[in-house]
Image (cartoon, rainbow, N blue to C red; front, side):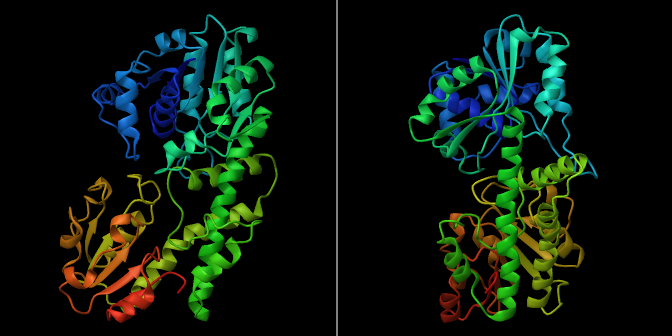
Length: 432
């Protein structure tokens, strides 16, 4: 099939490349000329394991193209995916849908034959209705169908999640579109993905409800971790004990920093905003947002306690600063609050992340990036394991840290407290 992906961010690029790998002809469109030129040279704008190989493979095979010409891409394609950003509006909970509506306007000017227009961006309920209204103001309704087809891609696992999804959600009452899209996704359905055809509004809400529930699990286990620290209980025992119950499941029950990234923070806020506009109060989701906002403050208090409130001139190392491992995404990462706070308190901070130096910290004079673990750690008073990259799991800290009295604050519980104790390393974890 001939597909057009509008937007070459995380969703558009990964989905487009994977669709091409299934044998479809895909044009990825973006108004950013530099990004498109770089993609043609195999320079990938995001860090996602395995993505560069798939881009090279399918671009060379001619199934994947990159363009800034939206009109031409729409004309050549039968299915148009809207994959633009829907960030939170400044100082509000509301999702900014300006890019979605701008694209809808552009699409409406270029439809001459039947097109399926798919909202793959995460959007509030009724957005599909508004997109349909925008397009129908210029195009006859029999020439297009607007569908909701949310994505469920985890950063760092996106390619696998696309190829082996739990489910494919198609929100449409249009039988023709439903049949075409079932054929498009047939290679994934044959591997075990459940194909679910629902209403367009239903599909929009499924996406938000999924992310809100996962955010709730993370927040729940983080709050229990706070209790475990008071009662001398290991949170990992609790996670295993409740996670083996099939009704609950063990995924997203790992205590650590606040949830971050491109999805959970903005999607929980947008869901609350949608509910408020519908005069419905989502007390649980509101509480999750509030608890997550306070999470970083709790961890900073722990750091102050570990250092006995003596932060000034202390050498603190952060290993990992992205919101999770296997991604370069800094959006709403706890480190964006923690490092500036400690810096302003006079700490001398070094950090290392496998995805490199971060612009967000360049303005702080006493925050410096090191391009290897040894240089980042060797003079530390406190080593903070912020992100659970694999390369942090087997570090011989005794060997690389010259300060004999250094402390480890393991925010991901990747080390064994017993082993740390045997090595005479002062160690603190989460919920331990």
